[in-house]
Image (cartoon, rainbow, N blue to C red):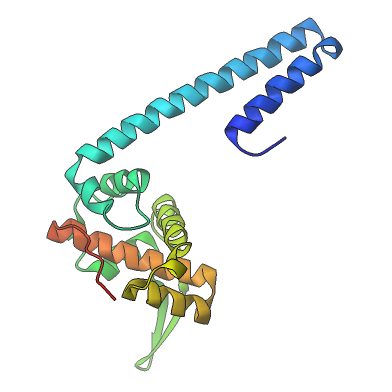
Length: 190
């Protein structure tokens, strides 16, 4: 089966039409009922997406978060719902740690050793932030601002996955700042 909703739907309907003679009436009825359920789910999903977009466009905190590249309506509403009071975290690092986006620390004798990300906290929010970071990384080669230069250098040194987590960490810290200081994100010129 092809990938993508529209192609999948067309392929299933085409296959049912083409194989109509080989299927029993009961199986035809069941398959067409599944196609109808799939269409109903698509309609419900479209309605829910429209509601989410409307909420994100009208809520001031969501609007503020959507000024940050890589954060869309879905991520913004999820962050606002989960982080009801951003001032509960003392700083942006604590907010990123709450989401599980900072390195674990092992300190002994005054020597600090940073390990991999902690992966504690809300996995769905962390996943949304990492996917948003990956989306911003796709366009980093076309931009010349300081943030894009930092991301390019990090990509060369550390690779795609570590860069995505580092950018997600930075986004979490910026989200904390946007929510506590009540101002929009402003991209610094290169």
